[in-house]
Image: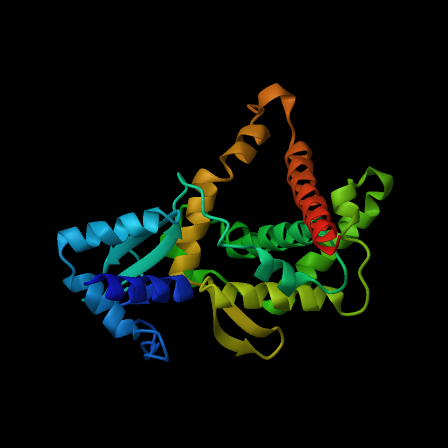
Length: 283
């Protein structure tokens, strides 16, 4: 694998996040397209790479805050015999460069002129509710990666759960935080549109895939192995502070609301910085 081929392999992995030598579940291997290798060629290049070439690939990805995980048949259900599953995951010990922007998420969820802080709140609520459907109702821990194939939900279920959550927040009245109140100014089909955009984001990122259409609930979505691996990593490396707060081990008597408020304040600060930058450019 020369440097050109390494760049093509990385480009493929950045686009699809995963590659399989022998795709399971009847999925066809992704064909080559203009400027991009086929899935078969990507797997062959990694398989045939020497130890030195693989180390160079790992170093190249590490410089971007990423790492390539390799799984064999038998490691998890859904990996076909004789196959190998390559998953590109963020390295929890490293920061990713500003090149990897959150703008596609903000643009997908934006319906009007919501701030980044408001859109971040929407994303967090939808992410937590989706994991309620994928994990909590199956009595499944984030570490139960091998159960990803049984984790399905219908889009209508997520809409209903989100609607219930909004009504619960509405019932809090003045007790609702500022971040929570930003979710209450919805109209018409806004909730369905946000859920649809959220699901499409996760399908595009390889975290969900459609499995069937249900006559009563509409399209049904299943978590992918990549989605389960990433959720496990988030649970281990990024949600640990929330568990500590729940158990009363947070520093200086912090609370979950404090954590949420800090996240929203950070997003609002980015909004102000962006506005200031735009003003300077216009000046």
